[in-house]
Length: 108
Length: 121
Image (cartoon, rainbow over all chains, first blue to last red):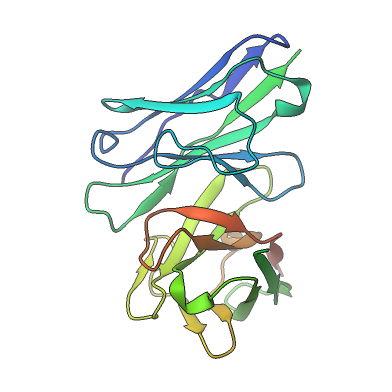
């Protein structure tokens, strides 16, 4: 079955840049979505269609995709950005949808 | 404002059945595909099933195929998940989610707050 692989954890100091990667064989032809999930809360969309930011999401969140790797970038990370982050996409058939393994971001 | 309110979560015995509902408001329901996602305690997100805006096409994960059925009633702005032959590994918070458009993406834009299903004897 199709898999999207993320690093289990990323640590960054306040004000620095955090990069979270998502690796999948179908990503060259399929969009990646990114969600932030804080403890005890529902997920929140932060990036869609690889690099688009929904209204209300701070500009420090950005996304990119190249080849089999999609990347979520948090520029100038804040303590409030501490959360789990998940990528989301589909396999090459477009009929099965998969979340990434998830990355815990720590800002300290 | 998009609102998605799940209900129906409960404690159920292994082999039992349960139906989850998701009441939608704040948007034209039949114009959007809908999806169920679950999250086991302390684990990541797992896509379960999706349905197009008109209800004519559905998609399901292999882990639930043949046991779970997604459906919708566009006249009542409500999404359903009928679950049968439940197993302990189905224990999770189940989220209702709204897609970006009529067809399934995957393009989840909005999420409900979730409802807890516990499968245990």
